[in-house]
Length: 103
Image 1 (cartoon, helix red, strand yellow):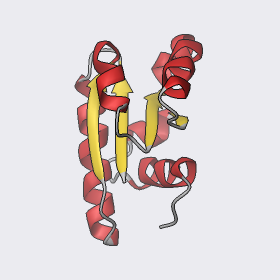
Image 2 (tube, one colour):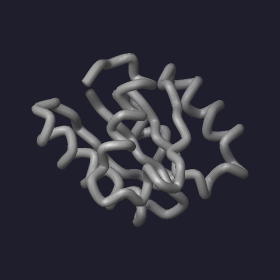
Image 3 (spheres, one colour):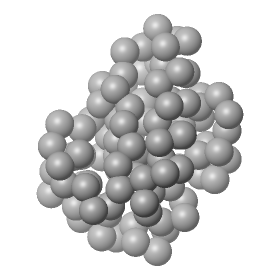
């Protein structure tokens, strides 16, 4: 499963993607979680299974939904808690739910 995490510049999404990878490894789930910025989103969506968006991008969610829909990728908004949790479990659960997978 390929999970894309997007934030404004790509910095905070890097931390979220790392925590998702760690949580998935702890569960024995194979995922590729990567971070991207909005400017690189189309390329990142090319082979993605789900797009996770930081709650702070709520004002741009309409545009992000359009971009994800154009690539046929489901999109989910991470709550602040899921995005900042140190273990990545909640973010992984959101990704799995929206991608249609089961943990």
